[in-house]
Image (tube, one colour):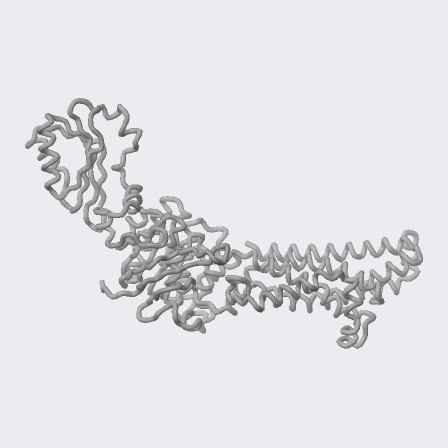
Length: 223
Length: 350
């Protein structure tokens, strides 16, 4: 049955399997690293903003402007522009190893904005309650901003990872491997329609799994 | 009760920057206040009068542009952040919107202020249980705030505010989101805390009945300025400022609406005169009515009466229609004015 529906995928099954693994590898590594960075950036943006608990106009402006700068560069151009830096950091600009750095640079600005929005959604009264209790800024960040925003953070992380899946397909174009690379090489360049469709199905499954996990987490923590 | 000051404001002014940088909005103007330890102090004003800013100056959430705020011997607006956080543990606060953490149970909410204090788990548990007992919600310990009623949420918020054993409890419109019965229950609880724990309570509100039911002292705030302050009884019995009078009017039944005053419902005819008398001190009123009707041969028809007990002293008055000869009515009025009673002629016969 699969060999009838997807003859070219079956023919290149081991390459296809490798592509899926590569996509998952890029996705997981980038998601984990960029989540950590973006949480920090998002917190910095929220606490240093005007009337924030650690208001600091200079720091806020620096982060705000840098994020805007990187968000305005189209990802495909960003990859090209980053090549020298990628080589320096990862030792190579191709393969999965070479894609992690540009993926992080590509997704962190978007992710930080998402986290910032999630944290800003929090009722200011809760933060004020933390202040009047005599909690330190760090305690407020940890036990109010983050703890009370887990649901929102799970939601924006889901959105971001789904965008990230899109980016992993784009890096495939510059020799990164993964499902995007497979779809271009077999589906597009060799005009094997079934390969493209198989790629779409795999991505659809990954997106669905991410969405379900995200929804479960945000539902679980919200009362 | 001691008469030691616990909080005082010394010429406090505060201005915010307006929308364009050159315009300044004055929120507080030269506020002077002193609040006695162990008292219940009310601050009343319309929204936008600066009440919330004023109460937030006490725990340093807001800082003044001029003047100083004293918490006992500490100048709260001139200490380091670390020192300020320590002071804040001595000043509990509750809010109109309760501000409970939705992702935490009642227990976790109350525990939050002392979670990082280094106290042992058992100690914290005991403290939380004791407070839940005090606010009357021991069975709700593992409930999430979303499943509590407004009154219950405020009780949890009160327990949370008390967990550091503060000396002051600040209440920012704490009953404004609650229905009348729940409001009465919460005010009762606050009174009980004041009596049993000796905690100083400072409330801001726009509802005069909260002041009436709860407070011993009141300050009336109008556009950032304190226009009147003093003991609640003397303010209620003898208000000077127009705004104060308006607020008091909201709690009195003696103010007949204009439609009634100018209508034929009262059937004023002949020499009949509609008057309002209000007691200034605690002399009772009924003997007066029977006395004047006997002595001056006038009929006194009581239309409305409103007498309440404020701080163990009666306060209120009557609206009555006097009927008799012109001369008798004049004598009556002169007599009443000679007593320690305020008299106002509301309407003559048409």
